[in-house]
Amino acid sequence: MDAPLRRTLHQLRNTRDLRAEIVSLAASLLVTRADGELIVTEPVISAATVRREWQQLLPALAADVRGRMTLLIEPATSRVGEKRADYEIGASLQQLQKPNYRFEVLRQLLRADLENVGPLPVKALLDAIGASQTPIRAALAELGEAGIVRRRGRHYAVRAEEVSAELLAKLQAMPQILRFRFERGAQIRPPAVLLQRALTLLSATASDGWQDLALSGVAVARADVAPLDLLGLPRLDLLAQLPRAVQSFDPLLLRRLDDGLEPEPSVLAPAPVIVTLVRADETVLRDAPLDGARCARSVDVYLSLHEQGLSAQALQYAKAVRG
Image (tube, rainbow, N blue to C red; front, side):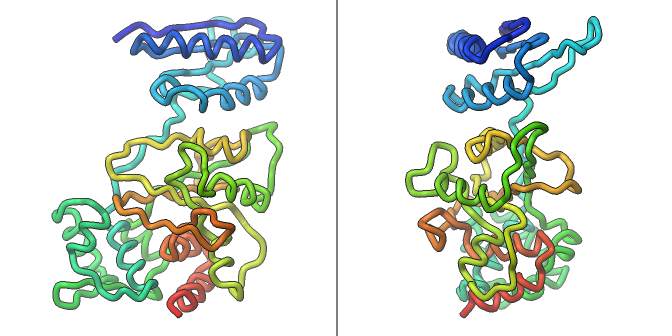
């Protein structure tokens, strides 16, 4: 493997020099497979400014290049001989868990129930999820033993009212969820403001990287069912539908929503933005009902309401969307 390329900026005083060095490092990485490190030592400008410029410029670079670039900030307070990474973008690519087929199967059956499709055969599940028979049939057997999925001949069905967040957790039938917070020093924007920005990003002319994302949660539930007992917008919910072969998710996409957002590692801490990852080959998004923005289907909205503790509203929503 090629040795890493390292560039150092000492006592950086302006963003112009920072941008020039980022572009220079990226250009050097185009002709090598090495990783690249930009080390900013004892910057005069704030670390938050350095991070912001880095995050704003990186999306303009080729994905292969930016995935190999790392930013290290060493403030003046570091002890002699100590290297401390204040921010490391190279580690920010979120590795995806293997598809949870119990969840994916349950999701497809819930979709059929809420959209009045009726029980589904195994072939329909195989086509929608894109997996082989072995994991799909294993998931059906486990869900059947738990009493949540009923078999009708060669078809399978589930009733939305019998599903709860507690049951999904007990069955270990939960999707991977990424949480985002505002970094220290960033301007905190309410979910309603983030929603307006998301509507633009999720339009038909959406920017690169957002084509697999859709709006979900309370915002879509309220648009689908106006009388729903929901006040305010507690958080912004997004759905990312990723093929099973995809192995990572780039959190930098959320910087297009707000450049102050960063991953929130704690599942207990409040998070203004949530991204739920689903792993099926069949796309189940829609271009309604919010200003033409791409929205999740009713099944994902329903599951999102349950996930955030709005079980009563989820049941009300299920009854309404069935008609």
